[in-house]
Amino acid sequence: MLGTYGSFLLLLGLAATCGQAIFAACGRRTWSPLSPAVGIAALAAIAWGTVRLPGHGTASLIAILVAGAVSALVLRHRLDDLPDALRLGVPIGLAAVLAASLPFFVERRFGILGTGLDPDMSQHLLAAFQLAHGEGGRLISAGYPLGPHSLVVALSALGVSLVHGFDGLTLTVAVASCLAPLALLWRLSAPRGIVACLLVGLGYMAASYLVQGAFKESLEALFVLAFTIGLHQVARGELVPAGARAPLRAAPLGVLAAGTVYCYSFPGLLWLAAAGGVWAAAELALRARRSVPAAVAAARAAAVPGVGAVAILAAIAAPEIGRLVRFAGFSTFNPAGPGLGNLFNRISPLEALGVWPSGDFRVEPGGGFAPAPAFWLGAALALAALAFGAWWWLRRRELAVPAALAGAGLLIN
Image (cartoon, rainbow, N blue to C red; front, side):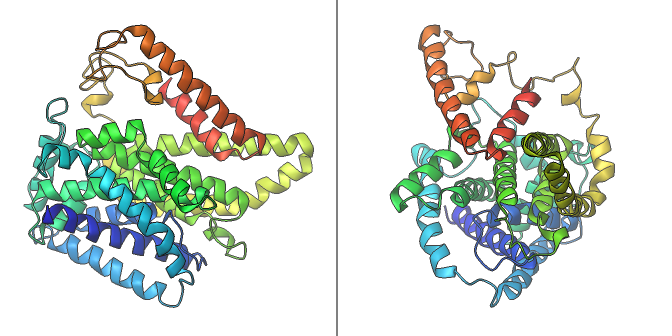
C-alpha cells in the first residue's frame, strides 16, 4: 500500500507541477485542470530519454525530480490562484483516488489487476525489468512505446517494486482524468462538479480498463480527453491568455501530442489528429457559412499557434522516429496475424456506451447473464443520452467535443 500511494503522490505532484509550469511558460498565471495530463506527457518523454543510462533507473528518477524542481521555480510568483485551485481540485482528487482504489479494496491487496482476462502485465513488467537492468527485449527492440514503463523504472530507484509503481501510475492517470473535465465544469456547485468530473474521468470504459490494470489505454484516453478540452479552450481563447505569443497559444496541445508518441506510439496520434482535423474543418465551415473572409481570417489567425504546436510535437518526438518506424511492423498490426489481441472477434462499438450485460466484454450480446434485448434496449437509451449531449454542444456552436466524438467514430470504423 505504501509503495502504491507513495508512487501515486510523487507522480501526481510532479505531473501537476511540470504541467502547470508549461502553462506558466505560455503566460498563464492561473491553475489549469489540464496541467496533470500535460505534465504526465512531458514526464513520460523525459523518463524514456534517460532510462537507458546506467543506474537502474536512478538517472530517470533524477531527471524527473529535477524537472519538478525547475518547474516549481518557474511557478514561483506565477500562480495567482493556488488557494482556489486547491479548494476545487483537492476534493475531486480525493474522491477520484478513492473510487480508483476500489479494485484494490475489493481484492484486499495491492498488486496486479485483471490477470483472469488480461495477462499482458507480465510483458510490461518484463520490459520494465529489462529497462532497469540495461537489457534488451522484444518490446524494446520492436519500438514499443515505453514511456510509462520508464516512469515506473524511475520510481523503482526509490525502492518501490515495479508492480506497485504501475499501481501508482494507474491511480495517477485516473485522478488526472477526473481533474481535466473541471476545465469545463468549474461553474457547477461543488457536489455536482465532483460527481460530473468522476463520471467523465471514470466512465464505463475508463473503469473497465482500470479494473484490468490496462494503463496504456487509460493514458491514451486521458490525452484524448485533455486534448479535446484544450481545443475547446483554444477556440474560446481560454487555454492561455490572449496576450500570449502566438506560437505558444496551443503549446500544451503539442506536449500532449508528444506524450501520446511515448505512451502509445503513432496510433495514439491518430486519435488526436482525427479530433483536431474534424474540429478545424467544422470551425472553418461554420465561419464560411457566415462570411468567407471571416473564415480566411480565422484560418490565418490559427496558423501560427497550430504550427507552434506541431513544432513542439516534432521537437519532442524526433528522437523516437526510428522506433515509430519499427513499431509499424509490430505483429499486432498484421491483418493476417494476432490483430485482435485477446479478443475472440470484433466487438460492437456500442460497448463504448457502457452497456454490456455479460461478465466478459468479449461475449456477444445474449451470451452472458442477460438476454440480448437487454443489451439493445440499454444501448438505445445510451444513444439517446449521447444524442442529447451532442445536440447540447452543437446548439451552442461549441464544436470541439462533438468533433472528437466524430473523429473517434471515424477511427473505429
